[in-house]
Amino acid sequence: MKKIILLVVVTLLAITCFAQSQGAKTVVLEKNEGEARVRRPLGVLPIPTAEFILKVTPENSGSKHLVLGTEDIPPGGVIPKHKHLEQDEILLVQTGTAHVTLGDKEYDVHAGGTVFFPAQTWVSLKNSGTDSISLVFIFSSPGFERNMRCGSVPAGQTAPPINTDELKACAHEGHVEYEVLRPATK
Image (cartoon, rainbow, N blue to C red; front, top):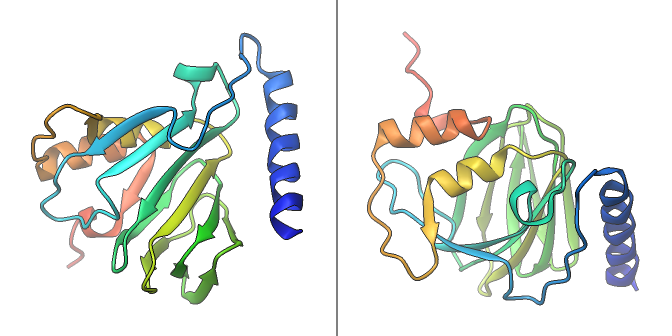
């Protein structure tokens, strides 16, 4: 029942935003459909998983108000500590167990759980369970998907390593700050 209610709420939110987006088009995608991408290997940042799918973005749907994507995070996988400078985010944990840190508070989130955090909130996530996490991410406005594209290649292409300067440029382009990339304080 909770999944149905959550699905209805997300669908209604998407429909409302689409209705307000001039030039937006309707998009219906199955689980493995969308803009499949592979992250470039990172030196200083752990990556939660190599693959992710961007499903709703300005480029593929014309949405001016939402970005939505999915990824599966294996046991032990980590989303490094970061904050979005301009976008709120919702994480829908469909399967698995996540240990989530928001600011200075920690939470264990299980299958069916929802995590919301506003822009400027430090966040990290670790798959603390024995099963993969199937995760849906929703952003309140475009921006972060530019960081995701910058640090990845389309699925099927070879993903060359990314260096720290490129990571910083991607983070800037995607309105995100990673703790590990912050200048050292003296």
